Length: 502
Image (cartoon, rainbow, N blue to C red):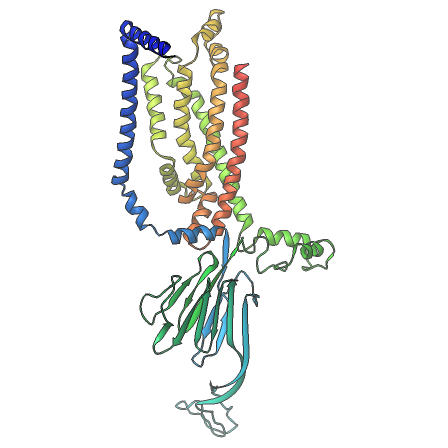
């Protein structure tokens, strides 16, 4: 074993002596690889310093990012517990609550009692009708002979039902109980007692736990329960934010007669129930309620998505049609005219050097917001890009096939038709299909600047900073469309390239 090893070492030394360039090349490759690796590492360090990535990560508000992410896949119910000066309470839900009108969720339990309240009701001045023969004074229009008006206000006693205790249960470990001017908040086995004093403000008893914050003494206390939700405790109002997974009212909104009904109840109404609207069937009514859902706006979203698809298709189609003849002028081996070659190529450079987003802004100002601006932006950008790619494909063809067609006496047009097109047409079609699939995504971006399509609606939903579930809905629709078009484009490109190889 040792002899063989020594023999191999001796043979290696002999080879190295006879062929020194082999080892020299191997060592130079290792040095080159090490230099490349070191250069990449230095560049990453420089980028980390130049863009202050570490500081950005430290200063980032990850809690807000987590809240936004949670809003994509969940919704909040936000009742307010309003506290009057006498300690009585009222539970109020927002006007557009996902629970609809007259909400009475099981996780909000209230205790009520009857109270008598004396309130001052302003008296309505009544002008007595002047009798025949009486005099009327412009100085005192409410007084006349034989008539008088009540002055001041009268006291009235009313009996009202008020909330004396309210308990909000987020989950098995988190709840808020409000009664008698005190708040008891429980989370993960810890209980925080808070006194609500109108003169002294909000006063916690003891040290605040990690999930409660108060900026200054007496101000409101914010209770953060993670993904479950949160609450603001103030002297006059306790704002509850309870989070639930899913999308609220995705099928029917709170104005629909089918709202808050189970699938079986809806199916029964559609198939055999009495008409809810005398003017149309329950099926037509249900479909109308889905399309015109005020919270999700399905019809408008789908229409805008279709606009985006049409923008991408028409823009790419027109770009391919215009780039096709121009690429023959730009190809040096097809058109033997240097000036014409350079003019056409610089024209392509001009069109593609201006980003699609900039073209979209330009055409939005020219044509106004809408799909026409988006189609024009795609058309201009892709004409330059496809023209460049097409001309380069023409310059790389095999001249033997063209010379063969020319040798039989074919006309110049026939030479291009039978000697050039069969070589490049599959490549042209493949590139056009790829750009069509890519422009479906690009049309969404340029739509955000007013070029129409679903991009504008997506931007509007993001700008409100509260409709992130609608943003998620539109993003999923865009992903589905991109996946479908990507599959179609890949299948067609594979088929075209396969035909070229056979």
